[in-house]
Image 1 (cartoon, each protein chain N blue to C red):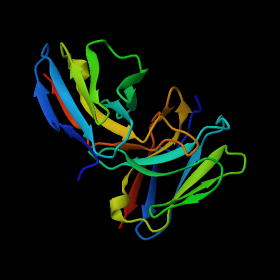
Image 2: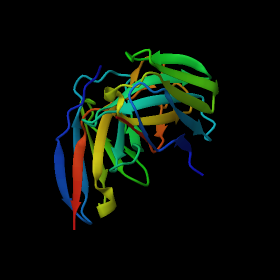
Image 3: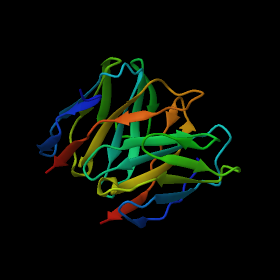
Length: 116
Length: 111
């Protein structure tokens, strides 16, 4: 079983559309994340949720809205897609926020979004 | 934020040990050193992490200098499947432990 799974893996859509990427983890983790990897391959955190509560919200356009129906799921909704949103989006999860032993984060395989 | 410095690329002969260096001279006492790798078109994969002591697991060894200003990831017997970008990360606490990825080291394992 895939620990962190996200769908769709590939998504091609037109500018101005609204799309969602879904993420589920079966690790029993309390914290989930969305990361974005752009064309220059830099991987940056976008959001972090702990037990359905938003705890990290980096400088991201408000067209991006994460939604966590339960602690095993963290979906990413993107409104009014722009060309610059084309990237690979990675969902991830960790046991909790981190503590004495650090905070190992496990990543999904990525969702490749292309806006045309 | 504690920054990390890694060489942009390295080569290693198949079957030999790969030693990947990382400089993190501004690391704070409660910040961990993490290593991840990303094989082309896949999600980042956790390798190992440590705070002060050297660590070893089934994938690699992590050697952290006594002053914690640098570390080395050691892949004892590199295989072609170890070709990837390796990221050295110093985690910071910001409501949770964050991982901030840099450019990493592109390791090429050569037959």
